[in-house]
Length: 119
Image (cartoon, rainbow, N blue to C red; front, side, top):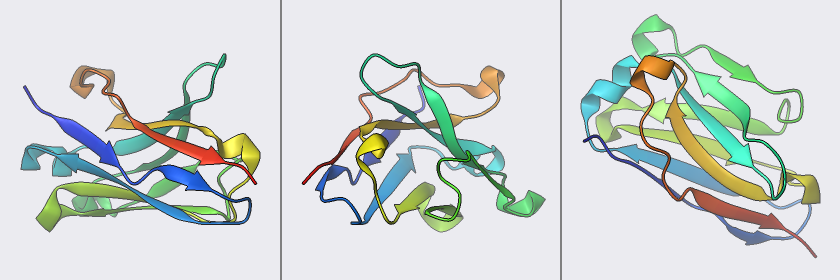
């Protein structure tokens, strides 16, 4: 079974920054469009940002809430997808997960990484 491990979350003050990492246990994930999702308490999981494979141009798409503040990227050599989050707001507080966007490649959702934005 392929494993996706999210890390990099934490407690940060409003206006602060964090960089999340999603490490895949197999390089096959370098072929997939990958995404970061988040789920806040009492809310549904939502897509935050996605990135196509680098061979497809590494095209990125962002939710309106993430535009101009978040940057998704990937490093094939490390089988890792990143989410750089700047100017964080309290409403960004959530558990963040990564997974391929295509349902046929979706992996079991892990524990994610908690991001808490609070003063």
